[in-house]
Image 1 (cartoon, rainbow, N blue to C red):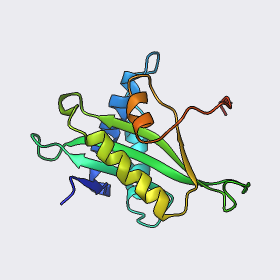
Image 2 (image 1 turned 90 degrees about the vertical axis):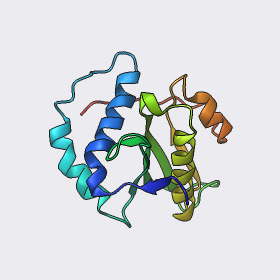
Image 3 (image 1 turned 60 degrees about the horizontal axis):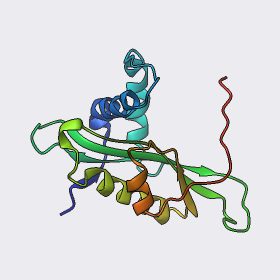
Length: 156
C-alpha cells in the first residue's frame, strides 16, 4: 500500500501548516499565519471536491498521529490550445512541503509523483512550477526543465 493519499477536508489545518512551512522557507516572505483562519473553510471546501480542478496529496507523519509529513498540491488550468497542447489542459504545482523532522525519506517525491499522475489522468499536457534552489534537484530528477520565458505578476 502506498504511503501517499489524497488529502481530505479533515486534513485542511495540517495542509495549511505544511504550506506555511513552505512559505517560511522562502526568503523574504511574510511569516504571518493570520490568513489561516480565512483560508481554512475555503480549503476544506476545495478538498471536498473529488472531481474539481484542485488536488493535494499527502503522507501521514509516521511519528505524530494526526499530523502530515509531506504535501504536494496543485491545480488544473485551461489555456487556449496550441500545437503541443491542443486541449489546453495544464497542471500547476504550487505547494510542496515536508515537515523538517520528516525530510530525506522520499515523501515529497512520492507526493509529487501522485500529483503528476493526477494531472496525467485528467489530460494535462504539461505541468509548471516555481522551484526553490533546494528543491530544484528533485524536480529535475522528475523531468522538469527550466523555461526560457519570464513570469510577471500584477497584484490586484
